[in-house]
Image (cartoon, rainbow, N blue to C red):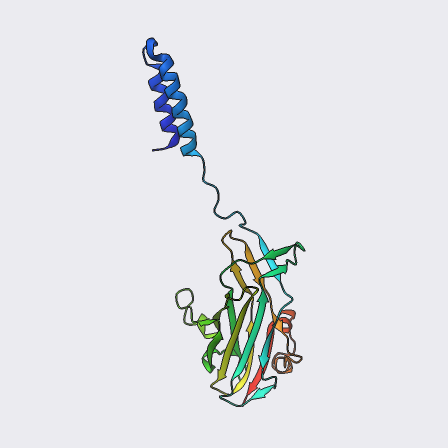
Length: 227
């Protein structure tokens, strides 16, 4: 029953009561109003930091071996670590990510001989963290281009991952560990943007195929030839 209706019923009973019990009813009305106000009070929000975003773009991911080309079947490893405590780049304030996990997409594409999504050209498994084929939230077509990476959050100071990528087909490919993020219990978002830390990202393959590389490609992308 709506709160305002409870209040109206109590008021109507008071004003139609006999005079001899008016004083008693005044006390009952006052008590009823207090109870009603308590019942109608809105609960405190469960998301006090909804809309807050904290950003870290100073970390790197690392691909090995560092060669620009590898034979079919030769494992490529992707490793990375991001801190739980860092200085937010928007506010310059130190924040602590108390989320249990961080996750986000690892994009895989073929550059040559044709440009297409290419997850199925690799066997991708996790050695630290998890690799998830998220069929609940994405279509079969979308999943041809990426896998969801879930970082290991058990270390006290950081989130870590180590992914094994074994090529099953020949071609020139690109890997992109895109935005990785998490949400804490207060609904604050933590966003990590990692660029390859390798001295050479082999972007010459990208340039040969497309003639130029955007800032996003330069920041996120690592290329390798499989022969």
